[in-house]
Image 1 (cartoon, rainbow, N blue to C red):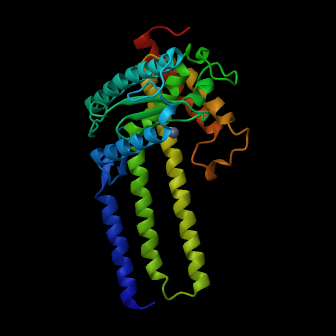
Image 2 (image 1 turned 90 degrees about the horizontal axis):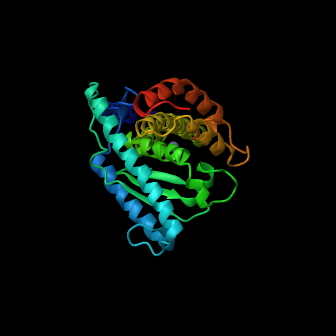
Image 3 (image 1 turned 135 degrees about the vertical axis):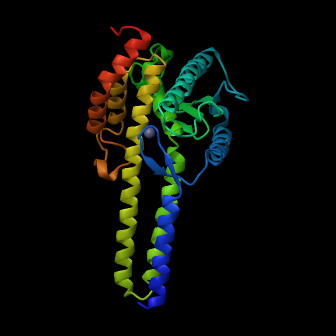
Length: 305
Ligand SMILES: [Zn+2]
């Protein structure tokens, strides 16, 4: 390998390290400093764009929200329920951020300035998300899993809303901790690193170069997946705190995730291949967090039965 090329690669890698170190922000939920190159405003703008696009694509399936085509009495009840939970979780998020700021964490709070919007999509899919900026969508296909779990979606599913609040709290947790922006930042960084190494492979035997590139790709992929699992765990933890602050029963969380783990009929890949934590890991986490969650609930909301 000629010296000039090696110099360029080393400069490239030093550049990436500097780039990484100079784009750090404190995450009050993990207490760690984390890499993020996308500002809150940028991420919220992207969130708003994808949300508008999603609503447009769903068209008639969007129930009761602004511009929605259909809103009969039962759709209205589902829509109102989701919005009531959303409002309680929004207030909980504002309070939680203020408590973390008061505790001395230096970060930019977002719950007050997010453009919180809660829409319900008529769909068989058991799906829910919260985009950066506070743009939430709940798909009706998830309501039986969060409801009475009798394999059909009916209004009976929203009689007890604690598990629906678990899902919404988790999704909102992703947005509050800027997981979308951090994932994009890290994906970009991995691409730049792979490019830098790619430059260095120019003179290598092609089959060897291919092997190195494949190994790099797998390492990057593995790293990003581990990263996603970390985010899932963090969203679980933030979601649980929001739940308690909004006075929803935290004991419903493990059962909800047990049900979610059953989707796919045990065909789930082993944990390291997947972006979601294995059900057992998740259950262990909740067992660990539950005593403090119950204590906080009871001190704020009254005794649990
Ligand atoms: Zn998640």
